[in-house]
Length: 177
Image (tube, rainbow, N blue to C red; front, side, top):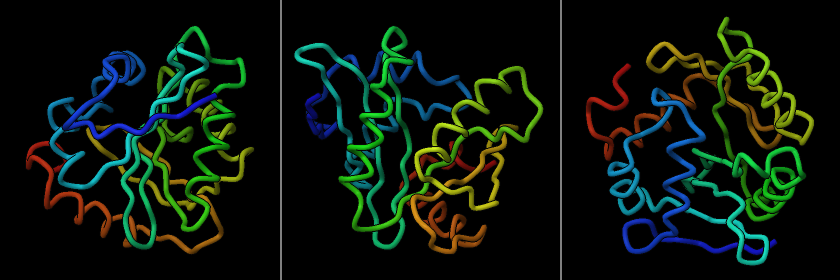
């Protein structure tokens, strides 16, 4: 598998946008035009993954001092369950092994129509070394569990600091919930 980094406000593979729009529900997606703007303002790291010339998936990461914030991770639907997600996660963890990062995922503790999917995702990350911090945050009625890549202590206050930092560049109506 090969990787290619993109600077979204300059150049990107259109398949990233397409997968972004299909892999995440509306209430979990930041509008694409905001992602483009934030990629410049927050120096977002966007990486596409390929098997040969075939697009496999992508990650979007907010690198920052202290604890980074992994925003999005998706694999093409027809390639899920074939080990690509594992390969991408392994590469991602190796690439960011020098400092911890967090990932917020739909909480498996919130009643929902997709509880089985939430539990599978949660189990995947925990099985692969991420730790549930016990911190949860709600955005637009969706509860998110905050996972971290190491044993660093992480609190609700830590998360709120990261949110406040991002909020300085965020469109006001997109994070105020």
